[in-house]
Image 1: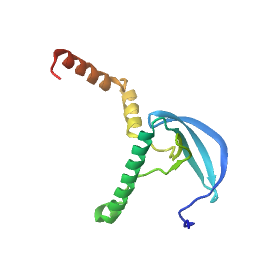
Image 2: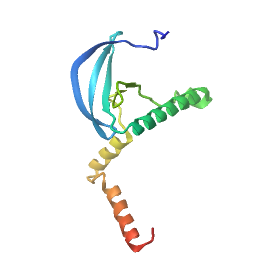
Image 3: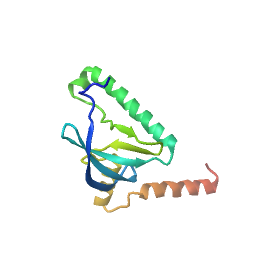
Image 4: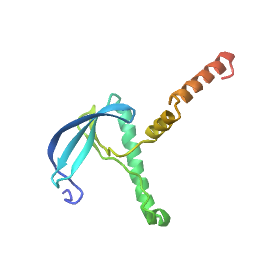
Amino acid sequence: MIHKVYSILFYRFMPRVDIVEKHNTAARRLYIRGHNGKIYPYLVMNDSGLSDSRRDERVLQLLRMLNHYLAKQKETSKRFLHFTVPRVVPVSAQLRLVEDNPASLSLLDIYKTSCSQIKIDYELPIVRYYDRLGTLQSRGNV
């Protein structure tokens, strides 16, 4: 039996669909109204690699376990520290719905914004790394 406090029934799919770039891929954000009247945004993610989605689900499970540990510790509990773990609803083997918070930013988004403010390409450190690696390999050091 599902506890009524922890479960939300999907009442209606809202007519608005946004195309966003999240988690380094383009995804569709759709909005679902729950039976409680609240609107929940979800990302429709296409999984090309099944192993990647399984690894992601394991990391989310690890974060949920760490939240349990953080809640039991005195200092972290006092500060209400926890990881925000999105809900994942598998629809098919290649398609899943991932809970989204449109107001959240990833560390990659923050890095891209700071690079654009100082007017440098955010891929420049990666390009420099591979250039340096190529020169070292050509000398035979690696």
